[in-house]
Length: 280
Image (cartoon, rainbow, N blue to C red; front, side, top):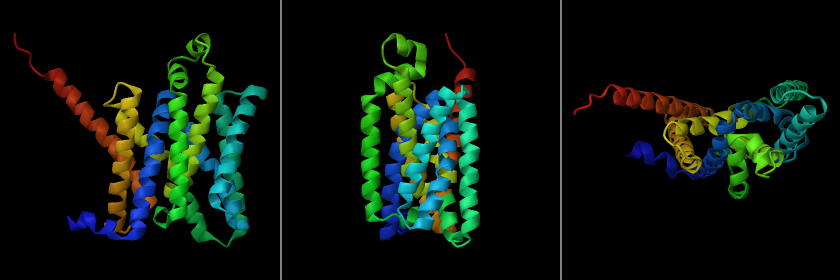
């Protein structure tokens, strides 16, 4: 037991645990919709799209979450503009802005030459540096995300099934899509402090994928995704503490491994059920 309890006796690890759990809950709910809609590429692109805003915020000495938020919102609006006015497909719009924002971020970092350590935090996060102020911000972000997801649940369900059905029912699929993009943006920005811009998609997607093997209804999948995400945070922090590895990367890797384990266990159970003998 000391191997498990000793790390969490430290105050900074307690803050990391609480902050990680808040992020896991937000990402678990939003990630379920992302998986249902097949929008994983958007989460990855927004994670990279934050890079120029975060780099500029670091250079100017302003809060990095502010820079991340502005950059992610700008990318979300740009995707919508390219799709509407440029008549490009959704994936093409994301891909173009993804490359542009990533390149801009690398250019800013390469010209600074003075914050290699900060660049590492930008890319991979620093969950062990979460402060009390960060926890308050994460609490608000999680609360807002859950409230919006609950209010838009019916429209999002219709959108996930078929956008044309949502339009026929008068549920305004374009607004529902915008709400979903906003939720993804909120989750990505809120998760930045924990796992960084490169690894945020792991905590957003992997727990939802792990839950999808065991839940048939979206609310159940969300609860399970939150549970898998929290487990990834706890196990990742323990791995980081005892193995001396980067905490954010350890959490993201643990989340992906849990998704793989969930798939493997489900496959074994399904095969056992298919080969189980039946008796008259």
